[in-house]
Length: 257
Image (cartoon, rainbow, N blue to C red):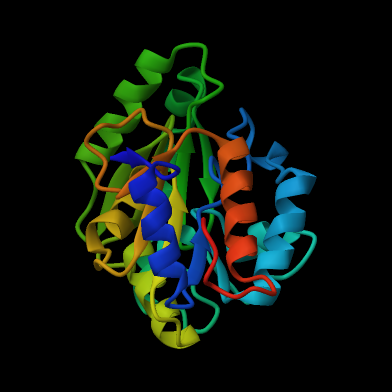
């Protein structure tokens, strides 16, 4: 990966912007800083302001592991598109009947409540996915052992994938973020996509991206990431938003990035 603000990255941004792309953002770690308690996550005011301006210029989407209504409540405006639960919750599509497969896992987690509590693991039920958080655990090593053990013995029809101090459980075959972004590109009529994400569940988007897309990993902590470019932090994301706004300004798309 190269830095997006390298000469190569700037040229790629200009080329992608010429296609009038969909702008798609992960939420936690991309628009909002990672926090110890998910309920405390907030998008900085300056980032919200830029997002709202971008949404007036181009189709804009938030594609998050959170529930759709959770994301919506954390923004000062309503983007055209919000997809939640790692791609499985799309308000434009009916809920899959297979979501009931998670009921058995709910029962199992309830039965293991004492074990989970002792390891400092909290369960977040988002209906179409379950999240086992252990960021606040005083024994993160033990917590990882517990969630890994659960993930290794899942019943048929559901799967697990990790994240930043979290284990996510979803229905096997549920749409992921890559499927969600591809649907949104088609739905919006965009000629490409610019997608920013920071975690494991964003890698499917990076892997599926076509050459016309622009994918950006927030952070350089994973050299194996399949993203095309990287940015270091939320300050650089704000700078990217300003660059995009300059490209869709009164002078059109002919300026320098």
